[in-house]
Length: 326
Image (cartoon, rainbow, N blue to C red; front, side):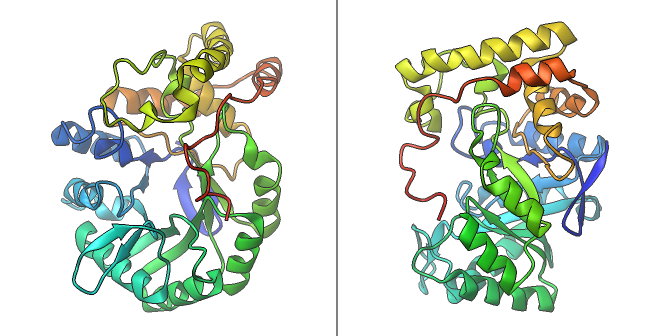
């Protein structure tokens, strides 16, 4: 597996998103043993960036990752987790609302360290920007945890250009995590040029379009009632029908290469630059192995041009877009 750098952080150029093992998607939380086998197999294949968050579950995904990283595996992993989607109260309860106040950051960090069973987090992201707390305050307190050795690198998720500049001026930011794929091309306009200007790595989440780009989701009928995609605008009937044209083009290229649509979608992302580390999520070993094989898949200039020419997806990325690009 080839390696790249997210600022000063050395990682394999394909990571593993752990969210779907515990939350939001059909089948989440139903097979812990298979999820742990998937994490172990990822490490054996050279995948070292493992992505989680306190809100996944909440909490249980971090606990799952801790179980998987016993037996000396922690040193082989680059653990990334996130804070800021939950507001923690003094009585130990929490609520779903953005809170990146210094006191909440401290509570969130100590909780993540405890659940992950580690004394440091390799990459700690602000999951969503808190409009009620200046980014300088949030990054300022994070910087003290870097000095204390509890955090190695800082990251942002779904932040706007001005926020990124202000955060980076307060303390170096190593990575920006934002949705980016063949059906989410928005980062190309401002975010990718900006992070390259500042020397910040880029981590695309949902590189397979929440499973849509694999070609296996052509209807939401088979999804669990609480599956996030049931209410996602891009999966509603009219938009879904329009978006199938994206899958058809990806499948066409995949057939030419004797590859899978998922491998083509990931290979396209890898071709966008050596500072890009997609984190496709899965809870199955077979899917992990399929995704990792994208590392050796080469797209021709003509195939890249065809994929580049795909029209944007129909529908917003979220039902409520108010929490992104702040």
